[in-house]
Length: 249
Image (cartoon, rainbow, N blue to C red):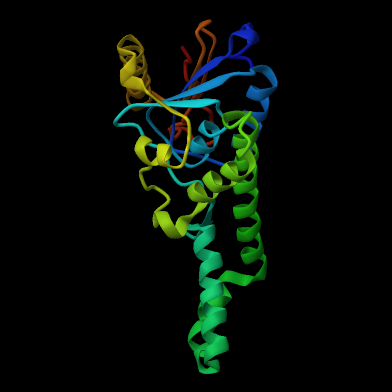
């Protein structure tokens, strides 16, 4: 909100987005705020906007992508131990166990230790998370990207299901390029069609990448009004219990 302060809302927003993803609730909050201010939003994906970044992209009126750009699946992930597990995998595993046990009761013994790790609460949370993200993205698509189309409701549901379909994508990190996105009727423009814009976007991407790789910054938000928010990693303190001040530029 502080970075966007002073913008002219009527002009619309061009959002250059580079993100490995994050929490669905955060994406919902970001989209809600942006859409409360701007009627027209375009998202430019310089290299990748994965997971929750894809969700934000699908809430735009259009997405600008280059040949190297990629979106990704939006199926939610659960942290179990040291590994992230797909919510879809949790649901599918339970359904498979249920099917095999109904067909052959002796299979229950083999499935018992697996089902113990799932538990009824986690299973329900996985189902809720899958439905929550897909329904939210479908509502955004219908309201914004597909606004005015007679088939907006059905089309939005189809697109949201495709991006949420872990059984098809096989990996949460799978690359969904602009050709695949277009095949799902996502409104895509080619970054290469505007060479000055492409040069500016890639320069911005490289500068911010260097800032994050060579400095303490882990997240940078910056507007054309030179308002900036920087979130830094906190390095280990040589004096336990004492904070280390980090200069923010």
